[in-house]
Structures are given as structure tokens and as C-alpha cells.
Image 1 (cartoon, rainbow, N blue to C red):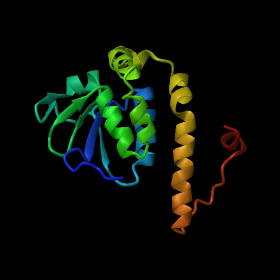
Image 2: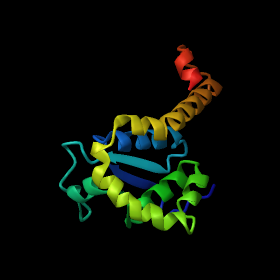
Image 3: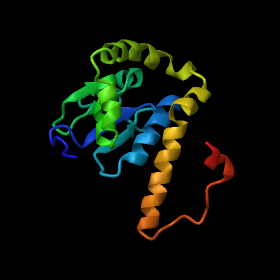
Image 4: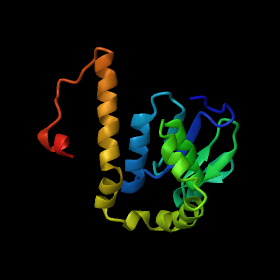
Length: 160
């Protein structure tokens, strides 16, 4: 997969204090095998109040990303680019479908505003299976490199 050098590496600025956001970013981190993504937790106290002209408050309001060329992207466009970089081009394409894209763009601000109030079980429903699949892929790559984990999956993990 050829990545546009004006876009990648793409730095994602996200709110790790949000369970939904943290789960989605963890999924992307596990899949970031080519290193096309970088991650900055803007909820961390050491993050400055402004980064390249964008306020920390704005980044806490909705997800932001900075492309390699310095251009800023916000909202669903961040996810479209991130999923492409993480080897999930089909998810990126779905978010770009002519009928779904306007709905995703319209719904995202509501989700972003209400993300801290969403039940934690929602992040498990949305990302649980994807996280388990990504973790299994990481373990398979480690085993192929001769560094297998000594801890096998539990039966509850296998059942999911």
C-alpha cells in the first residue's frame, strides 16, 4: 500500500480519558505496523495549550490530526485517513460512501460531544472484537519473529 507522503505519517490528537476514544486508538495502535500513524493523548496534563495554532480545547472537543505536510484534519476525515494507514482500507471506504459519508459527518459532532457519557460497554461492543483480532495479529507477528508470548489465550478470550 502506497501512502501519500504529504499525509503520512499522520499524527492523531485524541482524548485518552474517553473510554470510546481510547479503545479506538488502541485498536489503531495495534494495527499501526507500518508506522504511518503517531498518537498524542491531548488529555495528558503535559500537552501544551496550543499545538501549531490549534488549541488543546479544540482537540478535546473533536479528534484532530496533523498530516506530514502540516495540514490539519478534523472529525470523520481523521478516521478515514487513519483506517487507511492502519491497513483497514475497507473501513475507510465505507466511511466515504456517498450515502454514509454525510451521515457520519453529521453524527460525529454529537458523538464527540457525548462521548464521555456513553456507557463503557459501548466501546466493548464497537471495538472488542477488533481489538482481539488486532492483538492476535500482533502475537502472530511476534511468534513469526521468534518472540512468542508464553501466556496462551484464555477460554473466555477464545470464545469471543
